[in-house]
Image (cartoon, each protein chain N blue to C red):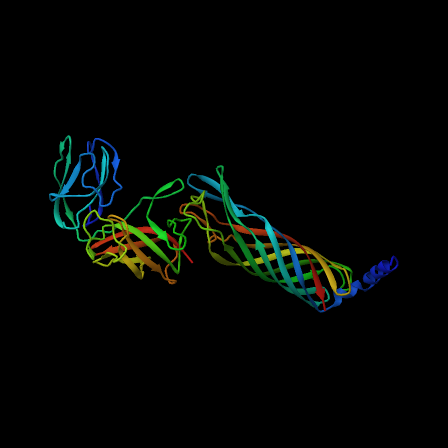
Length: 213
Length: 218
């Protein structure tokens, strides 16, 4: 048995580069989302609002278009609760987001390389959802209203990562993406007389396994 | 001052009563702490009395020109002349949510909580508006009595409720069961209702209109 494991390992290493020459890639990724907060102001002061860090997972369907260029259709689901805080008070509201986008990947090395760094950019749409339990009173409601509603926004994605061939048809992906969109001001709505506007960066480091064929 | 038969009113003044006292009995008593209020000579049910405030129900029987007089152990007030309209809808602003008060008593059917900016009206749901001043009912009810559940005393003059200019279908408009002088309007918010942070909710009944603003979302 002791000789079998090194043999398997050796075989995997030898055949691994072939993975990156395949046409299609499909798999799943998981990670966490981290977003920037925004300042919301009203005539009496300011507060901070945005989305809490949360678990993210998704699916990838990719196609190698050219030796160093591939495209992939992705779906990502984020658990990201809504929050507003300031003046010693805070409020949270359960939330989530669905992201659907198509990215172009630029590979840094030749297709059969075992380790394949890549940069990605693309665009799509994102559905923000406030799904918490509504109540007549929400702290800091004079600044921002955490709302049970849905909001679609267009978004752009940027990022990069590394594909590492674990086997002939199996890749380990480690990557980070920035989901870049307008701040969803229906889900986190500025209160009357308050000002809230800006851009939302949701930086999502992820790792996953994909299969090529 | 727009008031209607059977509606609840508050009288502000001084030396209205020697003590603070609230009445929770039904039928509602027409004298509290030896004070009583008359409208055109008829005794009115009193819900609350204090040196500066009296809450009472106007008689269902009186409409048109009226004279109110308060009788207390210290003497009789001067006459207050006013007009009782057939309808004068007015939404209570007595709602409380956390530290916030003065909230209109509009309740979402979905969670039975007051409509506020944090608890907005959603399209496609029911709301209940608690108000007074919707006037006489069918079947009629004696002044000071709590409204029965069966048959429900519906307002004779049907109100029109609109949200952002869109007329809402009503399921009931009449006295709230068990309540004295409190009416409720049950309405449905269509999917086509306008959305916004400050959408006007207007109640029109007869010649009188009252408007407040509510938040409406999808």
